[in-house]
Image (cartoon, rainbow, N blue to C red):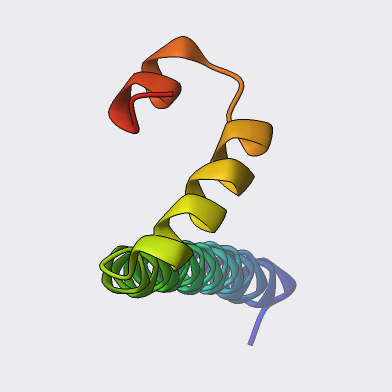
Length: 86
């Protein structure tokens, strides 16, 4: 086998390695994106469940006043405050 043929084989294998590394990076990027999206979905679900709990607790007038007082201190934007008539 000549040196030229070996060089061609090496070049071909280096190209295959380059392609495999690119595929690996793409897989890693997809996994990272998938984890990030799941984390965001979980956070949204937690907020919905907490909000649901607070709405349920607000059915009791004493709890409602306390929750609204806390919201009055917490909310700063007018559009948010309007949702609760604050």
